[in-house]
Length: 280
Figure 1 (spheres, rainbow, N blue to C red):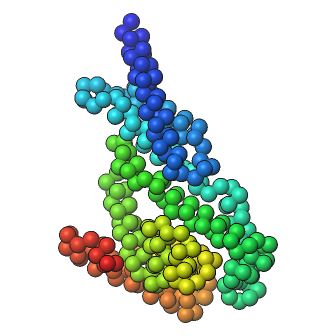
Figure 2 (spheres, rainbow, N blue to C red; figure 1 turned 180 degrees about the vertical axis):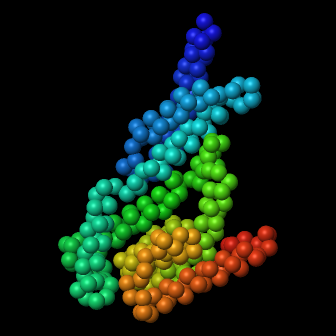
Figure 3 (tube, one colour; figure 1 turned 120 degrees about the vertical axis):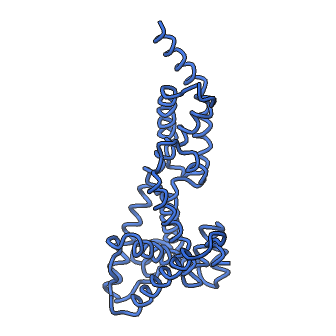
C-alpha cells in the first residue's frame, strides 16, 4: 500500500510540474537556432523531471518545482551541448568552401580572395559571408552551450568537478588575454561582432572595408584565438604553420608570446584588478 502511495505521490509531482518543463523549453527555444528540435529538448526535460521526482527529498525544505527546474535546466543544457549548432546544409557548404580555398591557395600560391572563391563555387559574396557568419556563430554557441550563461549557474550538484571548473576558468582567462592581444582591427571585429553584437555592415563601415573583408578578418581572428589557446593549454592540438620560416608564422609566434606574457602578468596581478582593466 505504501509503495502505491509513493508512486501516486511521484506521479502527482510529475504531472503538476510539467508546465515547468514547458516553460523552460519555450524560454530556451527563443535563444537557439531554429533547427534545434523542441521535441528533443522537451524529452530531455521530461526525463529529468521523472528522475527529479525519484530523488526529491521534501525534508530538505526545497519546493519540488524549484528542485525540478534546476534538474530540467541541467538536462536541457546537456542536450544543447551535444547539438551541432550549424545545420547540415551550412556545414556541407562550409566544407565545400574550405576545399575550394585550399585548392585555390595551392594554385595561386597565396590565400584566395573572397571574390575568387565566390567565382570558383558559383556563389555571391553575400552568400559566402552569410555562410561564414553561420559557422562562426555556431562555433561560439557550441562553446557556450546556450546564449544565456545563467544556465551554467543552475546545473545540478553532480556537475563539473573543482578541477574542471579551474580548467574552465583558466581557459576563459586565456581567451580574454588572447582577444586583448589580437591586432587592433581583428580585435575590433571580434569585440564588436561577438560582444557588442553589432551588424557586420556597421563594422565594415567603421573600418572602411567591405562586409566580405570583415568576414575574412573574423575568420582569421578565430583561428588565431583557437591556436593561442591550444599553444598554451594543449600544444598537441596546435597545427604547424604551412610556412614555418615565413613572416606570417613569425607574427603568429610573436602573438603567442604576447598572450603568454599577458597571462603571466595577470597571474601576478592583485586580486582586485580584473582582466578587463587591461583592455580599457
